[in-house]
Amino acid sequence: MQAFEVERLIKISKERPLLPETYVPWQLDPAEQDIYLPEILHSLEGLDIYNTLSTQQKLDLGRHEAVQVMYSYGWGEGLFCVFMSRYMLTLKPTDVEYRFLLRELIEEYRHQEMFAQAVACLQGDPLPPTRFHKFIGQFSTKYFAADYLFMGSVAIELVTDTYGNYSRREPRIYPVLKKVFDLHNIEEGRHIHFTKWLLERYTAKAGYIKRSAYSFVILFNIYFLRTLYVKKEIFERIGIKNADAVYQLAFNNYKKKFADACLQNIIEFVASWGGFNRTTRWAWRWLLNAKV
Image (cartoon, rainbow, N blue to C red; front, side, top):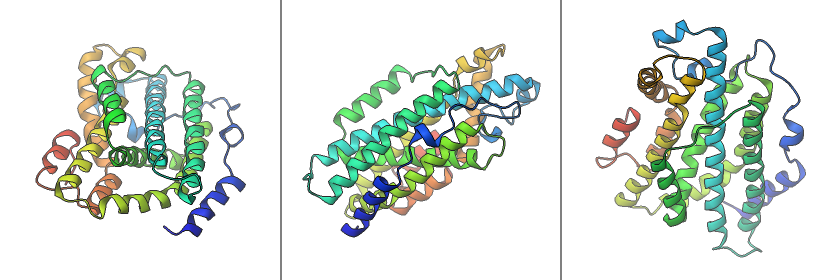
């Protein structure tokens, strides 16, 4: 990536910042017709039980699952900040790359605050990951090299973009959430230029073993997100009986829905640098129902 291109991105970030405080209409209450999540992303949509839910239960299901999505976004942005902070330690403050990453860090921290405020706006109470998920997350951020953190972060951003695209195209979506997704999409569009350059740098000389390792890192990050979205406690909160049994149905249903609706750009990304091979394909098919 040429220095003048990076300088242009820095200038845009400084001169045309998108501030969540003013860009998102936080003061707006949901209108009667507003929803919080497109129905295609509801974990129960497509099952017989979904048709037995009241309008309010469907609305609350979308609200609680949207809260989980926002919670996961904040986690992903935090992971990317860990990567950038580590990567910046290899640069000099006078490097144009260093100055760009500072601007990106500022924007990523704003995004984390924005997602947290969106959770509060939805009157959400996010359900945290399991102890195993926490262990994996803490272990990876503490011990993984910067390039592995980068791969995991990019994967999470791709899921974020997919959810954002569905929500931005849904005319009934709560305007606050639509603006959140709009802002994130615009700023990530600027970041992607640098991301693509760094991706080429990491994968250009990566051999079979390293490409396989990158593939597994992405796979487990996506699996982490997907399992964070569907929670038994959500079904209890909206008054569904036999929540354990419903959770199992929802888990399997959402696994298929996620594979059909949310994996295409991730599969294209991993395939672009040869991340699918005999070592990795079976895991993608088993954990995510990926058609690879």
